[in-house]
Image (cartoon, rainbow, N blue to C red):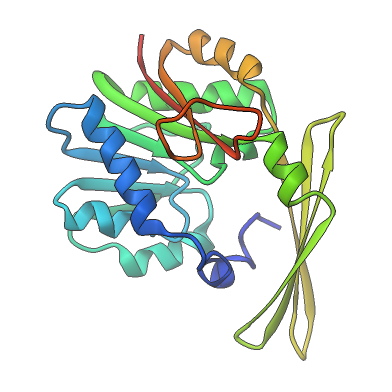
Length: 240
């Protein structure tokens, strides 16, 4: 079963605590800090398309890509004006033109389970960039998983469906195993996700090998340095 297939209709409800307006302001501030007069934007792993309308309403041309048809079916309801969506694999995609700002957030890159796939995704992003472009992506940290998710069970009731979300982390393999269960009166369905935790020391050589240069590395959607208690590492890159 494809990840996010059954989760898609409930995803926005389960993340209703997320302040997308504040998150958008951060992304736009980073974009405008490093790029003079940005016009085009690409989001890798756009999910249900929460950022697309925000960029679009501010007159940026934005393209949202995701691998999940189920998530894109929801994003389609938000794809108006300058927001365009398409289905694609983060490790194997290409555009016919370069874009000014590329971003990939909410631990999309943690779904890349090997160094090779991580590099493939970076190379695809590189090929969509000019020397004036900026690419921002995030990775969740081991600290975040151990503190907030390891062996914790979350429960929701949405649209008559009882949902449980359980996570377990294997520190040896650095894999995060997630099991989602969707129970209705008629049936119970499970969906499993697998992510990998990467360290800064692991990703820096991959970034350099793919022709990218780290402009800055900050934590938790601020411009503050990464610490041992950082939840999400934000990596800001450009073509070397």
